[in-house]
Picture 1 (cartoon, rainbow, N blue to C red):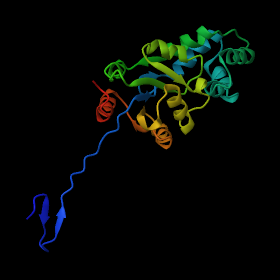
Picture 2 (cartoon, rainbow, N blue to C red):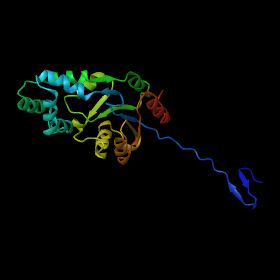
Picture 3 (cartoon, helix red, strand yellow):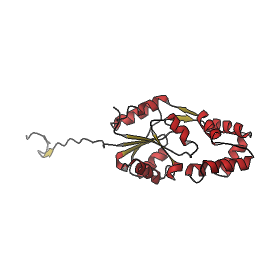
Picture 4 (spheres, rainbow, N blue to C red):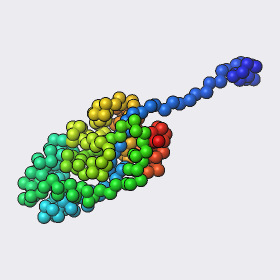
Length: 220
């Protein structure tokens, strides 16, 4: 019997083929912030901001939701000054950018073990944060992750899970979608990234994030 062939009972020969799945060589890593790299408590955010505005949490929440102010801000339709002006008009207060940012920082707790993994990513791989946040929150996120680039939906002009959000992020990094990995704790956002042509998967804590980064050979 010839080497590399299998002799079946019917004496027919079939070549033995060893298939090896090659992982793509990636040059960009995009990660969600809230829910993956940090824990965010929106209720606590509202409490701090309501205190600064001298109003109740329900009053503040009603204005943000009924007027869709927070969503418009996250989409980039309202910049920071416009959002604060609208809030001040509705609540008869004098909120400033530092009030919003102080409240956002107070409601955010970085996951140190997840953040530490980013320091182990190969230096030739571009690492960036892709988050659905408005302009007022982006400086706070940047302070928590000073070594990473932060790409917010407000600056990109589009939110996850719209596939165009991931394409815009890849364009900002100068990376082809097929050479980028996106990681999020929400599967709907992962689906959007896959539709855009990125490699994408979910992670919920340091263990699952480490496992995913190793699978794509991104850790040094």
